[in-house]
Image (cartoon, rainbow, N blue to C red; front, side, top):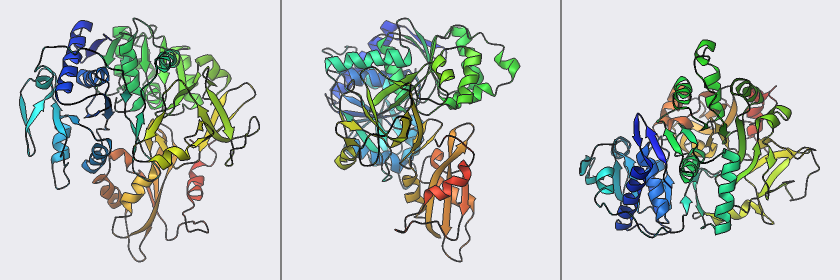
Length: 508
């Protein structure tokens, strides 16, 4: 894989970038990383991030991207759970994790720091750790490229669970047939092709943009990486560099559509051939507006870290079947079942079960029960609820679990509830998703205070901000003397959600 990588005006030609990640592969092997081992990484978008992933892939290890919004406790859990041999982090992020009384404990983990490109200091003082190797110095300690590529394993993503603790997805090595088929799926669902000029600005700790960058590298693409998404700058990049492919999510569409008409008209977007969108459903009106503006280059795919891609929807189909997630991919089985496993009639909603043989099987690290619970007769479900219409198109209408998807980011309320229940003055709480025009869903929280205690929203939010990533802090906080409860005493979240969703046709 020899992509051309462009980042903040710096261009790395294919051979130069290939040599960099090959040297990195040699360095990782020298650090004791072998086939099946884990390299954890907490890095912002940039060439070094892609180097780490490709080097890890080359030696048959797995890379574990960690959300750089996470606080020390959240990172500590993942490091312990995945058993990482090496932890590579941006220096500023690592410093923040080590500050304070709840800093990371890095016993058994060799820590390397990825510094801004061009900084080749051999050591960096970070917190109480000395020395900490700089990424460039670690990578370039040897000029010998790695030899003997191992069977690639891929990433180890963490997805939150209803228990509030993230679950690590460990995928088995793919067979040659699965590797070939999964590449075909990437080309079909994400539009990959030789000589593509691809743009990625979504954070690559997320599974979709992460796999997008790896897939584009497999095609030896000219890959433009941005640190963060900016609506007008995205248009500028497309026009200036004649971008042909991009990974974007509905929230990005909304922000670009909100630009003034005169700003949108400034940029020539005619080079675009394929825009891939995954992670969260795109509202039909947003999809129509983007197609009217950019032409029939907007594609949507339904997938999951555990199961891979399952459906695809092109622009023409989106206009004919607004709100659909598309048709099943060739070779993919999708069944709609009730709670007892019985098939539902056509057009009737039920649990979506899938068999996607193009991807190797997986396990949840240390959580076999969760893995077994999602499977029925060889089919697997993530708890999404939907139906298949008379033309074979899948529609996703709700989810049975508490998962909230905000701006394409998976958030499980149980984690937030567990943190908030530690706040003095809180008897109980419930976190749930409500409609949001920009992000699809936003977090809301209903809090039951101790009798006689007065709580305010600002204090609740501040309490959570010290313990969780900022995007997990609900923007809407309400207080209730009594919560609606089922006979078992469990909070009736549906009754809390319903007033917010009244008049909204979709439930996710």
